[in-house]
Length: 267
Image (cartoon, rainbow, N blue to C red):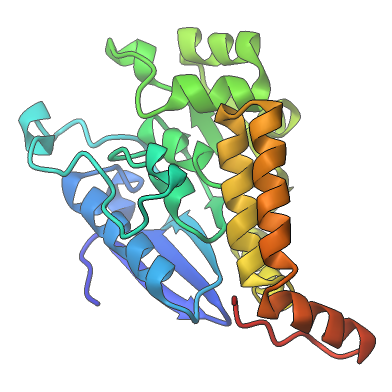
């Protein structure tokens, strides 16, 4: 698989997707959008991949949309993430909001400036780890735009309505310590330690956690944000009954009793 604006590689059960336009702080383009979608689909379909890490090359994570591209340059992109899965997760099928539909955990390793659509994408990841030097901004209001790409939905759920209003109204720059305090990022590392630490965490999930469990729990976490308590509990009861019959549950019991590493298959 060849790409021009991202780098894709798989190691120890982890797919690493790297935005690769370092000369522009990995500013988002139609080509990058298409390539990231293709890489995410490849990772979703690859049984050797159990966790996905998204990061950027060089000094930046993603500086937002490349403003040198005219608005018409985006018109040919598909509006939906197309997959074979037509379950309830299909509510997450927008052009830039499909990460929750990927049936594997996605972790953002935010190595530098993260702005606009770059922040939107990070918020649709399941977890976000950041470098001490990372900076953030919603950017939209200072460009005459609105809260795009799902940010009006994700940000208040993550940090609360008033804090989200502050970041969206002011479009101010905020740094990693504040991002961590607010809950925008989950962990902070020195920049040189960020990617190794993120990859190590992802590899541990890939090795020790059932891929079937990861898939179902991710679905539960995202769907619960649009469900009532009763709907969430009904889904949990249904999935628990299925999991008790699964091969991964049997292996989970066996490896615990035999005091050995697990050999999960995802089934």
